[in-house]
Image (cartoon, rainbow, N blue to C red; front, side, top):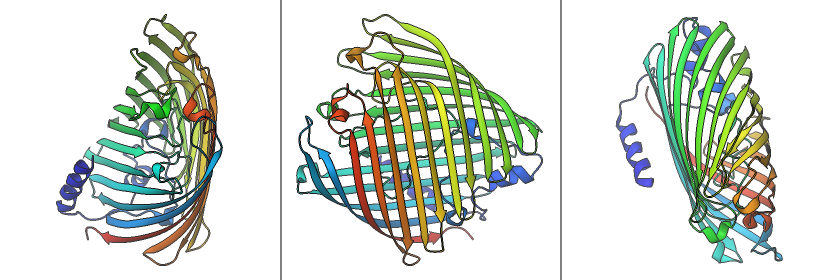
Length: 444
C-alpha cells in the first residue's frame, strides 16, 4: 500500500496544475447554476464534512509530523485481570495532496504511526493510514468518482487521535458498526466507485459499487471475532422538485462473508428506499430515507434464515464559516464487522466543531450503536450488544506551521460473547499532541 501511495503522489504532483477553484465548487455551483443537479447525502456515498468553512483548503501539498503523549488508565492485559496504567508516546508523520481543476479533484494522504508504551514495551505498535480519492467530470452533466482507504491499527481510535469522533453518513451502514477490539491489530481496506448522469434538467440516474475487507492478523487476540469481506452495489434515481428539494429512490445490494474456522457465514441484503433532501441553505441540508429490506443468512451446516424488515435513516449537516455540525440515525439489518450472521442495527452519531477564535477550536463527537442478532442459529451463540463512544478535543494554533491539541476519548463496548472486548470493555485515553506542518500551494 505504501508503494501504491508513493507512486500516485509522484504522478499527481507531475501533472500540470490548472486554474484553482474553491473547495466544494461543484456543490455550490450546482445550487446557483440552474442546469446542474446535486447528489444528495442519501446517494453520494460520502460523510458530512467536519471541518469548518475557515479550515477548508484546496490545491495544496502538505506534510508534517505529530508528536503525541497519552495516558491509558484501564488497559486489561487479558482474562479480566488487574488493569494496567500505560503511558504512550507516538510519532505520526503525514503527507497529503489536494488538487482541484475545473474538471477533476484528487486527494491523496498517507500517515504511518509509531507508538511506544511504558512500562509495557511489548505493546509497542506500528500503524498505517492511507487514502486516495478521485472525481472527474466527464461532461457538464456526468461524473465519475473513486476512492480507496487502508488502515492498519491496533488501538480503538486508530490514527484519528487528533480528529473529532462520530463521522456521519447520509445512508445506513452495510457493515455491522461499533465492534472494535481495543488493543488488537486489524487491517481494513475499503474501495468504492460511482457514476452519475444527469439525463434532463431535473432528473439524474447513477450506480455505484464497493468492496471491503477486515482482517485480524493474530486470531488469538480477537477470540469471538472473525475476518470478513463484503461486496456492495446500488443504483438510484434522483429528481429535483425545486432549486433546493430533491426526491428519489435507491436500490442497495450487499453480500457479506465471515470466516469462522472451517466454516463460512454469508449474509445477503436487498433494500429499496425512497429519499427526500432539502437544502435550507447552500451549506445546510436535511435528509430522510426509508423502505423495505430483505435479508438472507446462510451458514455452514445450519438452516438458512430469511426475513423482511425496515431500513430507515435520517441525517443533517451544516458547515458554516466557524462552526460545523452533523448528526444521523439509521436502522437496518447488517452483517460483518467481525461478527457472524446478521444483526438488526440501530445507530446514532453526531459531531460538531467550533472555531472560537482565530487560534482556538473545540470539537465534540459521539457514537451509539446497538446490534441484536436476527439469526435463530448462530456459531458461538452471540446475541448482540452495544457500543457507546465519544471524544472531546481542544486545539490551539501557535503559529501558521505549529499547533497543539488535547483530546479525551472514552469508549464502552458490551459484548459478553467476545473475549477480546469483554476483557477490555472500557477504553479511556487522554492525549496531548504537538503538530508541525508545511503547506505548499499548487497551481496559479
